[in-house]
Image (cartoon, rainbow, N blue to C red):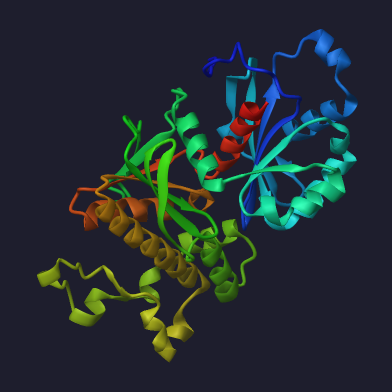
Length: 374
């Protein structure tokens, strides 16, 4: 399948390699466009450093101990700026930026005449490092604008596997189902970006949006607390613990206080009344497991995000809430909790939507800006 963009034939081609970079507080997201229509003449004239970079990025799915290429997300047959190729999605910890720059220097990146478009806080934080180590001046971009432009671009491609989906019966383990869909007319919508922290945007069009609010309790909070409480070392490990835990051993529920439901205000007995409320008891603290603590942390962070998102949607009179960000990667627990929270607490008025490329839209937006700037 060939996917095209508008005005491809008239677009001026920037120098390869084509990258989009989103340097967040916890993860770096890198989007790389690999041309697959390279002619024999182009390959003959191509400098060795460019070949080396392409081979290194596309011949493996792991880089070092923590870098990963999400091969299942790649977009093939994509036409950008008059070239056909594959868009690859790569992530690694922000703490590994120095190692990434060292690799770039070894691969001869500094000798290539290219522009590097970057967004996220790290585009400012690491600007001097890029200049000193690989002699590259970053073209810094606004992260929220890149997020929206990247999201709208990917969602508009009309992929065989729809980008957008929602959950039916999210809290019923046996009956929960993931349903593909489209955003339709798209606007207006509340866009909730869950990274290290959380930003919530009211989006009325690709260029008409505003940040409504946010919260500092995001994915970084979840991982940080899990590291402290359980001794885990990574996000994936923290999620693995949570999947085997029971948060009711840690949280105080409505039924723990009322003995059942609080019917007057429609509060079920299973609703959390006090996150970590059971931990005031010494006996409970001694009996609780690392898995329970990880799950309770996940529920606490997710419920807080869902509660704020619901209030924002009501205030902005929006019926669709779209959740994105790397906190949701391989994190079906939080996605299902958010889906349930939106629908239950709004009486069915709000619907939670999710996207397959959840954490990469900022990097995609940066790549699109590279093509525009040329």
